[in-house]
Length: 569
Image 1: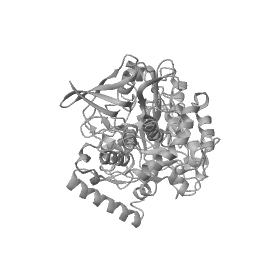
Image 2: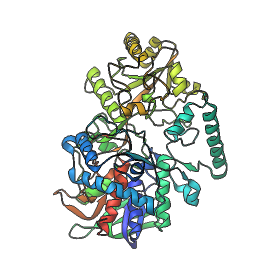
Image 3: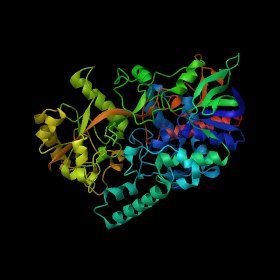
């Protein structure tokens, strides 16, 4: 077996792994990244790419008033009895420093999302915006030939393969048939996209999570950090005292034993595709297969198993093992089912969610994590502990053609094929729609009737849709008096079935404030670190704001690199 020595071996190439690699390389360490799949980027490359980091530089420069103390109060409220003070304090202290480091030293640059409120902005310490940042769009041509190894974005959340940004850009796409300015803007982007596909085979204007990974990868390559792909780590190497010395890796040209003088970092993306651990930790997936995830197929819990094999333990005490999101399943051209996470349409006026009973069960504009909790509760209330967990978004023709519904895009994009393949359900009347989704026709009609009257006044006395700044930030700013509410009354009517999915797992390896992996006695396993979704979430099983996975991922990557060099800053 071949042997080589480095300072740091990183297992996984998402935001956590790459941020660790880049930060370590900038401190003069020799780093190698090992990725099991043939492309790099992990779930991050498919994600929205937002990073929740209180006190970040972009927000402070825009005059946002925030503090670590205020954020700590908010996280303590959100995590409750699962509040991990040492790790939270480390995150809040290092987060702004990490952002400053990446801005000043690397290709990673950030944009502020001031409209992006915390998910519970009215809770103690909550904010109406400023804590969520996103990687600035990136020209993929700067990666040169390495662009071919960058994992593409999730196909279902692109438009004809084109990545669409949030905020004003998304509004232009919604208004493309109603505004000459929006039509010109979208047309310009579309022609640039066609040019890129013609000359490069894919979009070169990288957005969101794809831009985050590309910028980190460019930073790694600039510091001569290799990213090995198709290189799964088979086992860790320990000495007689239990210290982790390195790992055995299967590369394409043969196995290699890598000795890592400073440390091995587990950042393999958690366990969203591990049916065995899903069965153990996700109650709505009793066999492990009832759960749906947009995560790449390689996210099968390798990091957790590698850690456990050398004495680490997984924190299974959190109230939620993953970040939940409602997902629908559009059929792909090859006949397989895709995954469409519902982030935005939930908040639009004229869209509600019902279970098979035909009744609403939640403020649809609340966070996707809260939405799914309510969905599971209501299904079990109505059908018992073994009930099928299913719900539907319901809307009318006016709202559907203005905002779209899930994978079904707004006018003028055609949608007949989606009806034929069963993704989009259409009924001439609400009763007709109810029969098709298996709901009680009378109850669904009553639900809509009871919803419509207050909705015309911009009110939702039952669930309060549109009542918080987070709710309203994803509504229609041009619709009043409530940007999230409109009656459902113009047939035909449409529905899309929802499943519970995830945006990453929370249950992970127990680590300390330095990102060191802990053994069963709560002591650090020498030479072993974990960041990203391989490490247990610091959010206590809750979802406080947009980017609470990636924000800690890049922060603890920065912390791990700092610790491996013995530095305090």
